Amino acid sequence: VQLQASGGGLVQAGGSLRLSCAASGRIFSIGDMGWYRQAPGKQRELVASITRGGRSNYADSVKGRFTISRDNAKNTVLLQMNSLRPEDAAVYYCKIRHQRLGDYVARDYWGKGTLVTVSS
Image (cartoon, rainbow, N blue to C red):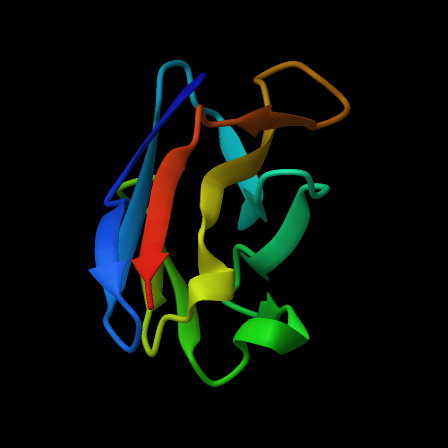
């Protein structure tokens, strides 16, 4: 299973970006999908996650500004980021929990990350 993230870039404070992450390969069952971010010198942190049924969870710092969504038919997860702030600048990583056919447990798969830069 491979994850391809896209949509990062440079934006002014107050602007918007939409991140997309598509899973491909031998996909059997995807559970939770999510976005994490890591700024220089900081630990990777959860930004938002979404269950297969569509229940979402957000970090307090992005509530009301970011929206996570998913398309189960296309094995994609999106992150709409509005009202961006300089402190949102980071490398954003997508993660999925995937269970392979025949396996009893699921495991996490990570994308390579996409850089978001926010200028003040």
